[in-house]
Amino acid sequence: MRKIIVLEFITLDGVMQAPGGPEEDPSEKFEFGGWQAPYDDEAAGEVAEKELKQSVEYLLGRKTFEIFASYWPKHADFWPGINNNMKYVLSTTLAKTGWQNTTFIKSVEDIKRIKASAGPDLQVWGSSKVAQLLFEHDLVDELRLMTYPVVLGQGKKLFADGAVPRAFKLVENHIGKTGVIIARYKRAGEVKTGTVGE
Image (cartoon, rainbow, N blue to C red):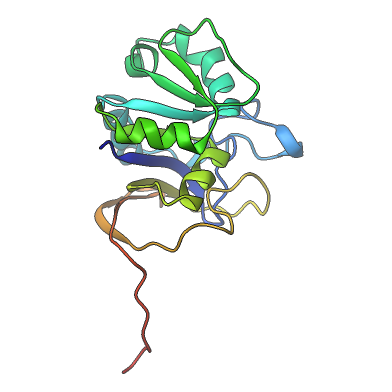
């Protein structure tokens, strides 16, 4: 069975919309596109570069797919995997594209079928609605988060109400010079509770 790994750039208040630039995703009148740029540093860059070289396939939402499809086919030298490896796109409106190695899927059942099949792990980049759907159906095996020291107060978020309660274990972390916290979490079973101090 494949793992589903959710990778995201997020703010302290969980916003993940348009980290890369003002025109990336201005939907819903989002005003802060490009919030990631002032905090880039060597540590974050090294981690991101390592992720781009992973032998994986991708699970994307329609909006992220459209953003990626307009950019990455022309920049294959920087991220060859996003062009060469399979991309599964969850959409009820798209059915074809000129971008190579793309398969459109329509439901959580399709995701479960792919997860249960043989093949490399699946990475989710961006795709807020897909990520929330995965949490809702308890399908996330690992989180790789880069948390930036900024609060935006608006924008698409990684987490929403309705996620299945689940514990995760921190297995790797780095702190960049600009305050970016890079953390990798693996699924760790049920949520445990207790009383502090007992």
